[in-house]
Length: 434
Image (cartoon, rainbow, N blue to C red):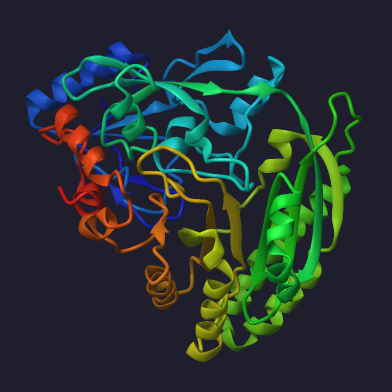
């Protein structure tokens, strides 16, 4: 065991665990948990540290999953069991080598598969659930050191709780995913006025497998993204290296970093800078393997708060946010990201039981986010907004219990599998009220 200071990617959370362990398999995780319990220490597993909250913070034992065995077992009918420590950027190519792919992914692929499902990571697409909705079974090491395997047929209550479980129900060591034959996506990215997007929103969602858009505050400009499958065997037409470098590295990261630094020094320039950003991202289209199209590289550091709401509420929510932005005097150089998903089943999923729109607001890490995020939270609270578990918000367990019909059932499962709160920390004490 070694100890070291740990900081998440966003630099919003820091921990000084008493010990850091890199287990290699479920048996080693079990031994660590039993030893920690005997020593009176709590335990938290951590993946890539890409959550903005304190979900992985501990002063006890930190389990880093980077050395956990990277099993990848193909069962047939698209079912694949993978080790929990697989990072998504490595899992995509590994599945492709088996002729398989995940049905939907988020737009960042640095998370581990267990971290992504544990915090409710999602992509976009009106007919698709989040990543956790693709999970068909879990292997967890429970607080008593036992190894549990749960699915819709085996301990279904634990399964529905732990699919989006924030690490509170056990240490996930393996995940069984429902995959499908590998496929390619045709990506079309088009600038469009915000009013036009909102007017045609239902049609855009219905006509495209994966639709999202970015709105640039202080303007009424958006960049829309539409990704749709092409027939099996269609030729790929990826971006050239030069175009990919200009768009994804030079404009979306390097130039965007410069614009944000200028915004920090000269906030009054932000509306003009946003207009520059909106114009710089021109229309483009390409066709590539699905996992390559879903993910984007993001090197500009930021803070983020994201909220899920009933899909029909989105236009009014954006109007309220726009009104607040224009009246507040705040200057916001980051675009607002808007995505969509189908109602899904994990009890603590932000899309549980309802077709969903997500609104993600960001602020550059050198600029204060507090007033902006508080205002968005206040607006979304009026629309039964559910905060993303891995992103910034201030709701507590009592407030969250009102938003999730099965919240009490999930807490009952937690009482059963971790009554002494071996996996607890300050964040869970707030959001789960204990």
